[in-house]
Amino acid sequence: MRPWWAWIITAACGGGHVAPETPPEATKLRVVTTTLPARWMVEQLAGDLAEVSTIRPPGGDHASWQPSQDDIVTMQMADLIVVNGAGYEPWLDDVVLPRERVLDTSQALVQPIPQDAEGVPRTPFLWASPRRAANLAFGIHGGLLHLMPDHQDALDTELNDLARLLETTEFDYANAIRTPDPVSVAVTSPHYGYLLYDMHIDALTVHPTEAGLPAEERAAVERWMTSTPAPHQMWWPAEPTPQQRAGLPEGIDHLQVHLLDAPIDGTYDYIGQVKHNASVIRRARSDAP
Image (cartoon, rainbow, N blue to C red; front, side, top):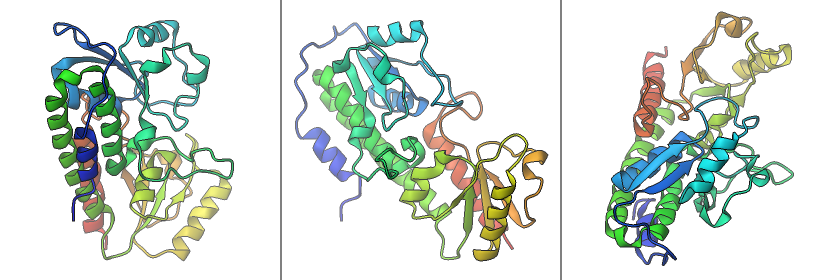
């Protein structure tokens, strides 16, 4: 059986688009992204062929962030604008951009996007799952190939290597999360949604504030602990404060599982951060009584 990324390579290498204009050899492609994961993927695929920047600061609330006028000009001047899609950029319809240069990476997904009753994606954080990240890479590869058809061999090779790396990383992540022994998971951010969905993990989602969990959510955690098997893990984007832990039952392993949208130690590395998360989850399982 072919690995799950094989169709990506076959589709990507089976015939490129003809670009209406190819940048001069001495000029790097100007690419602007709205997320660090997308920027990282462009850098892996294009290397020295592109100059990549990200307009949105890492972390923070994507729903309330708005691009500045300088950000808009930067996007308008770019050869390729890589957006996440799936509702991640609610400002996109209000900004005048050259739409033919906008690449919506969510359109490259082959897995279903969970939606609410009104058809709105439940969570836009597509990069949370390495399996979906491979699809995003395929979409980015297509956008780069459209503008640089003369570099198809190099782009195809980099996509092949990146897809293999993402497959290996996804396998390692899955082995850390899914084991024969059951574990119960609660999460404190919707960022984990696609990872849990793709790993078939039915998790409780709570919404802590700086002051901790509301009373009704603390009650939901207590019901979760009594109705699901131990060990119990609660995933946090950052180390929870004493106030956030207050009122929670004993017996919960509080794990810092990064959201993969910001650097951990100053330098962003998608693969490295996924491996770090896998290590945290694996270590918690091995330490569980």
